[in-house]
Length: 511
Image 1 (cartoon, rainbow, N blue to C red):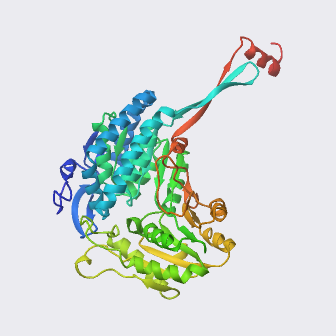
Image 2 (cartoon, one colour; image 1 turned 180 degrees about the horizontal axis):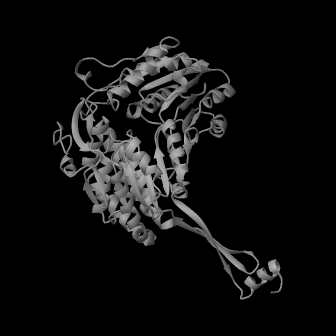
Image 3 (cartoon, rainbow, N blue to C red; image 1 turned 135 degrees about the vertical axis):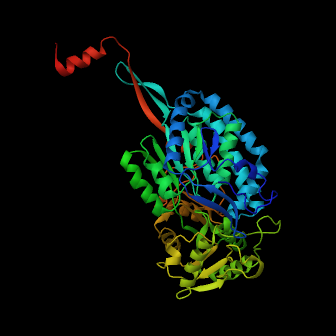
């Protein structure tokens, strides 16, 4: 079924593209066959904007079959041919930038200025990057490593990739999954979160319109339990890439082992924000507020634990709270809005639960509540600063995924770095200091896949993104991501006419 809901054409200019369903298989939209429906809800208003038929296992099978059929031809395309297609893809995305930005804001509650300036341009840039990177896929040069033999290494695509993307950055996560996979010659079936399928579908449609062959990019929108688990366990899927919580990542790994497929996991985070006593306090305060509140805190790299050396601690708490109180909540489509709602009322209530429980052992300096009045129908929560929580408390150790920053003091540098490493996670971190030696030590000793110095949150297409420890393994973006989506083959040539006979003689003697 298709129900356009209450969104106006101004807020949802691409709604006519979804009349044929929320699946995209073999270059065409389709309706799901599970017999159940799901609604995309505007988290700013609580109103349904699109209702669609969920994918079932039959839809997953059809999408995998389409990807498998398309694989030989796409894998055989030259790197230049794939690069040309991706350049056209980037151009189509640029033409549709405004409708992508509005669809992303509508389904996620992101301020439109964020999707216009960050999500969509970042996706277009990532597409252009992989268009160029596709031409640099290579193995190793030939060499004689064994007498009378020449060896070289081929880098080859894996096959059909089954990917699962989260709801916090639906467009960018679709791009991070799809682009390196297809640039390397694979085909893909992506399952977006059922809360936020709109921009993933627009992305796939743009790929077709750019001339990427049918079946190379497929989308199935269903539940994780049905469509997601079936995709991960499918025998014709050669690799699974998942972004989401660590708990679900463990389940994905468990299912994937049944068919011994390759897995790539980008999981949760609890990023430390370490402020040494020689840091620029004003810069650190602004960095903390931006880093903690990006995407309403629904970012696995967001600053969540600020460790501040004791001489700066009270001033940091006071100034950060004051700056948080200037952040403007509001309609994501209004120009003056700084912060939108959380993805759903359920997520808002989850975040509120962490803060409410923390009142028993910590100080809630500002925020800690949902706004009243005209915003109360949306999933809004005020920017929140919590101070003086014990290191082993829930609010310090667990991923909250909301606009909440916890601040703790430390004394010596050793303690600050130890506390930064004292969670199961290791996705991202930042260190704030004017001393290059101090900062360099922090980048070396903090166990995280990315450590910023005097900044927190920026990412670029040319550099890898991925975690340590319970934050998963493998890399998104950059040329390093090709390591995930290719396999290595050793090829060895016998350069003589008698080497085979010599080996036979060595092993079996003269016969």
